[in-house]
Every structure is written in C-alpha cells, then in structure tokens.
Length: 400
Ligand SMILES: *Cc1c(COP(=O)(O)O)cnc(C)c1O
Image (cartoon, rainbow, N blue to C red; front, top):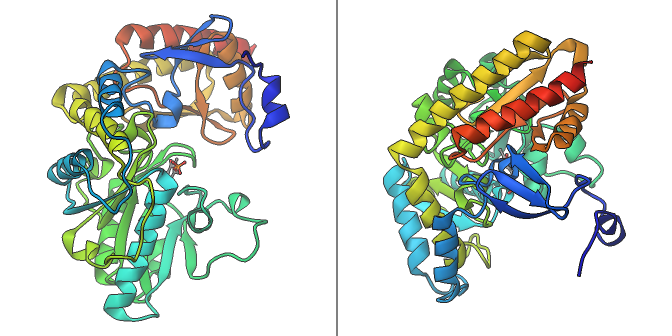
C-alpha cells in the first residue's frame, strides 16, 4: 500500500513536522524517496546512523541475531549484552554498564542513580541536580525538566523539585550554585540541540574540580557526542576529564534503538536489585547490533577518519563562507559540525534547510540560527564533495 506525506497529518499525532518527501531506502550516505529521487544525507538520523544506512556489518549482525534470539526480559542475561558490556568497560573509564533503549532513558537512569547514591551516602538533603541552561537531555518528564530549555517542559503541570541551572561554559555561575547538597552536575561535552556549542577545556576541568570538592557526581550526557562522533570513542577522552556517570545512545545503536549508562563499580552498587529497570533494555537483538557497530567504530582507522573528514567539511564550509558571507561561526568537534548564520540571516536556518532539500541534500538545524551536520562517520570523501557542492547551490539561492 502506498502512502503520501499527507497521510501523516491524517493518522499521526501532530508533534512532528516531517519533510515533504518520504524516504524509502538508504545505502551509505545516500537516501532515495518514493519517486526515486536521490539525496545525500548529512543528518545521519540526528547523529544516530554512525555507519550510514544499511552498513553490511550491521545488516549481517541484525540478520544473524534475528534468526537466533530477539528478546528475553531481564529475568535472564544474554551473550550479546555481556559482550557489549565487556567491550564498553574495556574501552572506557567504566566498571559497570546499564542498557536501555534511548538517550532519555539513559539520562533518566543516570539521574536516578546519582540521586540514589548521593542520598544513601550523605542523607536525604543531598539531592540537588545542577544542569546547564540551553541543554537538552531527553523528553521523559524528569529529563526534560533537567534540560535547560523551559519551552520543552512548560505546560505539563508540576515539575520535579531540586533542579537548578547555570550558564554553560561559565564556571563562576556553577560555583555560585553548587554546594554540599548537590547530588550531581549533568553536562553535554558539546551542547548538540542547543546549537553545537563545545565546552571549553577549562570549563570541563573546572566542573570536575567543583564536583570533587562537593562530593557531587559528574554526569556527561554523551548521547549525541559519543560513539566516535568526535574522533574519540567518547568526547571525555578528547578533554581528558573523566565523569562518574556517562550516558550514550543515538550512535551506539547505529539506527537500532539502544542506549546505555556507564559508571564505576562503586557507584553502580547503589542500583541494587529492584531499584531500577526496563523491559527491553539490553535485549539480544539491540546488543548484537551495538557489538557490530562498536567493532567497526572503535578502531584507529575510523576514529582518525572522523578528524580527516571534519577537516574536509570545515575547509568546504569556509570556502563557501568566503564567497557568500553567510556564517558567523563554523564550530563543533569531529563530525558534529555547527555553522551559525551571520546576523544578516538570523533566524533563517529553516529556509536554508528547505533550499538544501531542493538541491537533494539532507541537513539539520540546531535552533533557528545554526545549521548542523551529523553525517555518517564513514561518509566517503566523494560524498562530502558532492554534498558541499549541493550545499553551495543552496547557499547561493539563500543569499540572493
Ligand atoms: C538526543 C539527545 C537526548 C535524547 O535522546 P532520545 O534517544 O531522543 O531519548 C539526550 N541527550 C542528548 C545530548 C541528545 O542529543
């Protein structure tokens, strides 16, 4: 049965506003719509398709596990989950892993763990959560309230208490808020939805020191920055600052719903049997895909490739900018790239995105002023070149 974009408005809850075309197939960094029109995809499913569309290693893992064992519940453990947990422990600071299905669920687990551990160690008063303004941590009610964008959490009734906000990259602002009642500080090493804003090295190091001074847990939300996106497996490794709890989702499943929370053995003890859980979390099918993804991504060739490909993007964007003076800033880390519109074009990122679609190019926004690119980590140099040519045509049309 064939459907059109109009059917979306007839059958779906209206909380999204999808593009006018309907994709039906993808391979690598290319996508085809119902009419057979081909697009270059620089959205990567919002930093999810770390290996592009239908990467052979992921398709193989999915098919192989798909005829073996899909789901058990957490009344049983399984081999793919144990494999993936061991790999994550070996590759990071973590001693223990909790699996779930999304970024919001990973952050929900991290925040619950931080409060639980702080309260068990220091008493009921130690439950304050400190979070950055303009941050994004997911859409469950706890995580959206911890997120620093009230427009996403207003209008749903009473919010959980004990959450306060500081300005990102402003250490003095955090220092003024943090105290011995603080259970945790949560930050994105690069604010993704908030406009592709990287933390400064001094800020990240300062946050770690303040957390240590007040026995507060430091949570890095690496849902968008993780799984190789920066050219390290996790962005904390780029900064050389280790969190107590780290959350990962998006890229770690390569397109299959998978999230996880990493922490140390000591902190993990506070999530004793029965304190937290999820039906699907860590199911064999998702973990089999996660294993295949990690085996490909966590290699020197792919991680070094991320940095080389970033250089190609940045050079092309700077060249376009020299001609059209459209950007005030090109920033980000690895293959999470933000291009902020110059004041003359303020608020018009959506117009540029629509013009890109006309040139058969898929790109993202990060707020009304920033164009965001989050392509496959293994996008070919030819696809980058083709995409930047299409993007230049969109920019030319945008600036007339
Ligand atoms: C996307 C995102 C989330 C939410 O992830 P979902 O899988 O949509 O729940 C949380 N934190 C950050 C930094 C994100 O980019």
